[in-house]
Length: 137
Image (cartoon, rainbow, N blue to C red):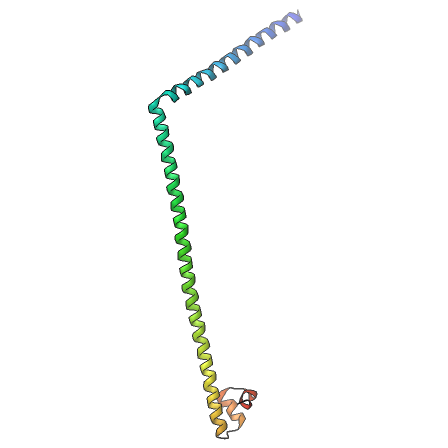
């Protein structure tokens, strides 16, 4: 009796599996038919082509805009960097020129004081130059 139940259960399982496979194949065939019908629908195909073309154009415009933005940003950065560099260089050059001019003025005063036989200690106080700098004049 157990053997008959097992055989009966196996037959039911086989029938159920067979029906499931048949349904899956039918569903797959039905989907394939639907896809084939859509591929033959010229209006649908034109809409899909138009949509894909619109997406490609949109992506191309976005890429071009991104590239242009990058170029503009780079150009603006270079211009700002150049401007800042020029300002900094001008500021440093001006500062160095003022320092050199002040130094030259101190040397001229020291030379004049030496020609008037002023003591070196007074010239040091007057100009801020070192004893060695004054003696080398």
